[in-house]
Image 1 (cartoon, rainbow, N blue to C red):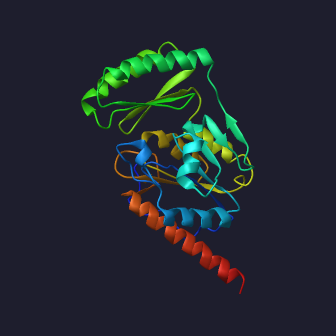
Image 2 (image 1 turned 30 degrees about the vertical axis):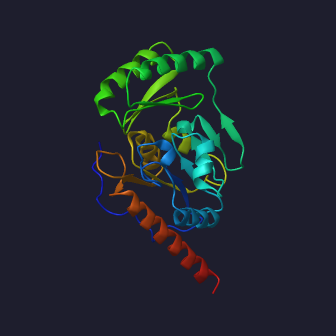
Image 3 (image 1 turned 60 degrees about the vertical axis):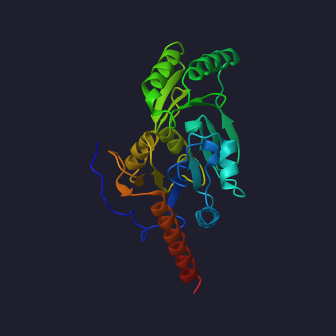
Length: 260
């Protein structure tokens, strides 16, 4: 993989009208928790996102493995363009929701198989998302290989599904849906089109996004350690908060200067 720069991503070249902003949530805008329901985005971070959303004329989206409904709860009172479940759900810049679905019998069979398998692995957690499933083992690391084997055995029977490894989670999702495809789709539509993309993420699921952003000569930022395609790196979630605060302060200053 490409060697990354151990530097904070640039700010001075960014204005409200020349970049589009994409943010992963867990591990980027919010600290990772043992229980997915315990995750929060701090109020001040939501305020800064609101400033960036307005300054970019709405060219700011959340890109996550979570369903769009959960993203709305985390970002409230903001209602942002969003790609949920790695792009299987998308709310576009006009506010229209697009959703991939599985045949009802496939969804039911997969859920039944996973519920049975995960019940035999104490400490693991099955999260159902309709067209996708997340098999969490953060609190049962000893079952990592068994969780992976279970996911592989299920997906082997359904060619429309693929595995997506993440941090202490194995996700099962519709084939052809990933964060890179979601960002690319946003970049073909207003208000994102014609801008340069900025994407910040922390996980293996974000690498497809980094790849697309790099191809568009945008700014890709990895949060934390590990090999990555991203061109920049910050160490932790608090660094993301500081960067967003500095960026929105920079844009506010530019806007004030333009009115003088």
